[in-house]
Image (cartoon, rainbow, N blue to C red; front, top):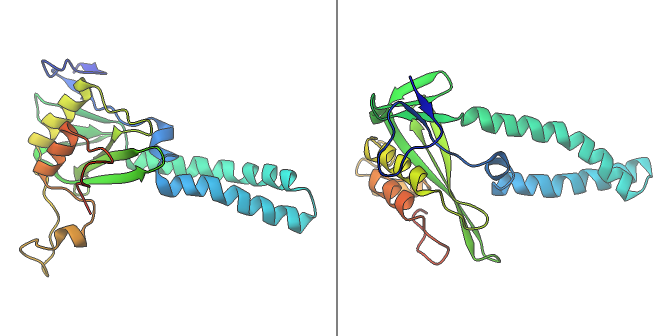
Length: 210
């Protein structure tokens, strides 16, 4: 099987094609919860250590950073293991992540992580999708600087979504899925997922999810 790092936007490549994703910093540190963790915890721990050992705040910060570094690395690797590098094969209609391979039709969920940076007038978007109990993928649709994926990446994502079976989750208590957006915030239908892939909304656009 051939493997290529990027398809031609005019002709989706044959064989296994790598699905681009966010770099390690964008994937981990730019996530709001992780960003707050990295910013606040060292300061809090450093202040506590400085008072407890009666040393300067700077020494306390250095000690806390030394403690936080392995914790940060563990959290980072957990994130990377959850979302392994995905590959797609349009000839066979399969998605692969690590050793796990499923038909594209088995991709049944998609979630949009949205974070508005109001001071920068930017909206960060990350699309996550996958199969129930199977491979999953995470792709940045709009980064911290407002940058969107290359056309070749967009083409690959759009083809994946079109051949998927993505639906908004339902519960027995809501068989008509009328309140699905409230019960499963961030989850998208296939049409909505395709729309955000082709046209990642800016901060001035209506939020595509609750």
